Image (cartoon, rainbow, N blue to C red; front, side, top):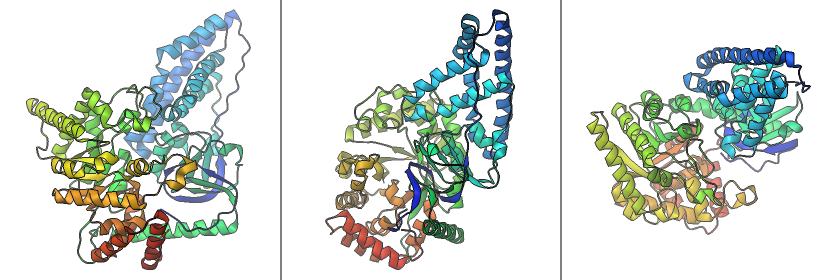
Length: 589
């Protein structure tokens, strides 16, 4: 979602990772956590066994407390979100942690709180130096550390009760326990110094449908309790003490978003069809099963991309076939009879799972990732394919293979799918024998080979996030060169035109699941290039549906041809901005 060139004025502006979309304007509530004070003075020999028993009792109390919190979380946010406390339970049952703590008490005459604190700090220091996934789990360690020490010391103050009225929660990090205890009616948004796209606070924010920005580094060093704050969950911006003009601008943005939501309810169940009768499939992208309710809420037709990576990132153990099956069925049963396209594992790059040992690489986005891992670790791929195939017995399921770079990989994947089908047949387990299989076109080599690839599959899905970065040689996560990342670059438009043409020549449908599909400036171009399916974030569905339903396909084809004639991305953007603003005056650009 793009905006005008309005000049923002505020005391401080921070840029982080946009984690949950929306706009929040409120005051700040600083969540400093329950700070613990540790007495490091050595204990007397006569106190050792008392401290050991105190530690053991604290562990048991913490376990009991976690059961209560998990039950509370299940009631508020569903069983899936409640499972995040399982990781805490495992930490409390970790023999190494328990033995080392007791060793510190008995061998070094440390108090129980000091011994446990030291062990947990070692874990934290190790994780802080690791990759994004490990850093996003720091909150788990902090939560367990704080909980056990409070029980050892007998101090049970509840700092969350200090929150008066509605506010945006600002913290260095947020633990699952924090978010469960919060009164969601008062929470307007979340901002944290730490965290990534897989951190627990992100999952919670999405389930609560409030904006969140994470990875803000030192925000909490500059913000104060009661400061006025604006959270832009679309662009990952956080504004501290903005001036009145900036507040007015964002309030107008909020109102337009609210209007869009109201309009979406009016057209939610209407078909996505142009004025001259061309039907378009408009579906939603999902990262987590708990987002599935937003699919129908916003009027999407099924799931155009379910990123199954979450299954491999949430635990140190590989997900079993049964675990995967149950996750897929949660989505399928809620969206049936609409389709659900499940992308096979796409880890690697910036998604480094605990369950798969990925060696350090100089260029991880060009390294061992996605289908490359699947084809090498065939047992992992086989388990996932079996789970997806079994899920297809209960709904309209399609398989999507990511990161295909050549014909050989496609042949290997099709062989693996056939092997999984034969195994299920042998086990007498049902599956859809005619399940559709597609590939993501996100590598330039595959894009140039779609005339050969398309006849071998049932559909193509254009993954613009990676395709654009590889085509333009621009790391989309590098702020210094972010201005070069343009999905309306003429070269990108030309390769998209080729992919769609090759797909249709082979008689297969072509969709797009990258962020470009949700950009209003790109909608008419993609429509005019004859894209069959748009898969966007649930919140973007109303805007894209409104544009398509209010447009003429034949006119869009002319617009697309005009856009292809420009030499610069900036000219394409100006051209489309002028058209969209004229046709859709209430649209946020």
